[in-house]
Amino acid sequence: MKYTVVSKVTGQVLRHENVPREARHLIVLSEDEKLCNGHLKPKADRRVVTSSDVKAEAERRITERFPLWRQMNILRDGDAAQAAQMADVIDTIRADSNRIEALRRIPADFRNDKHWSLPTLATDIITAV
Image (cartoon, rainbow, N blue to C red; front, side):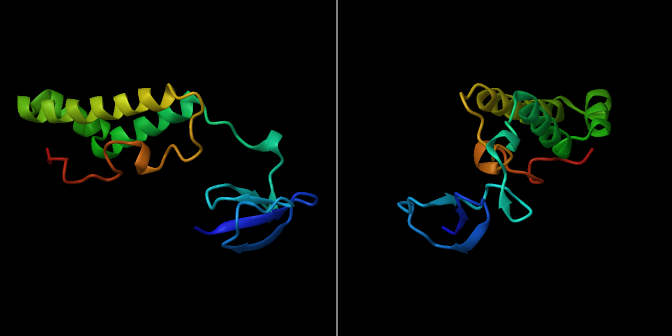
């Protein structure tokens, strides 16, 4: 895994490489952590992920598979199988959202597919209406 090495004194990025985590005089960040203009963001400026962020991601994932126009078409003109398929996808995403929101600390990478049962753009699940 590649790490970013940041000076504890200046907050400036020193190098990007594979480094041991035992380095006591350096801050070692994973690739997921954000830097601001090449410097480590002060802790007070680091954004805390809220349940609203998770809900917004769940909404994005639902509308990615079933945009509102498609949901309306399925509810209005679709058959029971299409409605059940849509309901299953929505229920799965909502259950994932509830599980992530219930965590004591929501991970910063909560948008990553590893936290969700259905991957982003799962086009094999969607049937055209």
